Image 1 (cartoon, helix red, strand yellow):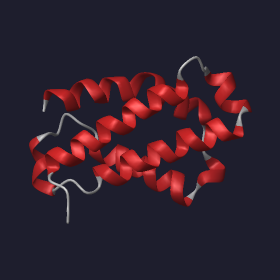
Image 2 (image 1 turned 45 degrees about the vertical axis):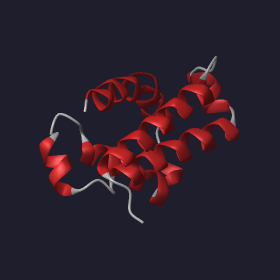
Image 3 (image 1 turned 30 degrees about the vertical axis):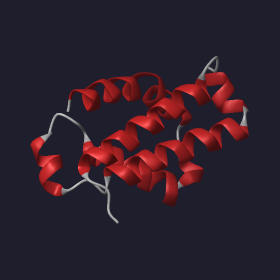
Image 4 (image 1 turned 90 degrees about the vertical axis):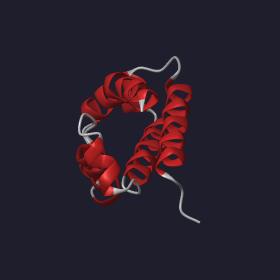
Amino acid sequence: MPQTNQETIESILKEIANMKKIMKGKNKIDLENDLTLERAVSMTLSLIGEKAGKLTPTFKKQHPEIEWRKIIALRNRIVHNYEDLDFDIIYDIVSKKLPALAKQLKML
């Protein structure tokens, strides 16, 4: 049974909370040097993008302040072009953009 938009948003927020736990006490150097951490971060970002893609088009249009296309595009990049990921960018997303996204989603 498909999730409602609200359930999907709650699921995305759960993944963001998971990311916070994964990255607790970690920095960019840890991300670059720890394959397990790299994979955990990539998988979690991929899950967030997958869930964002399941939101209805109407819902996404009602909330243009959120960069849905970029979130989904990141998922596609991770899944289809993993070898070319720039972990400077990934770290920036994890450390800055995900906390901001969580704040936006909580307001919905």
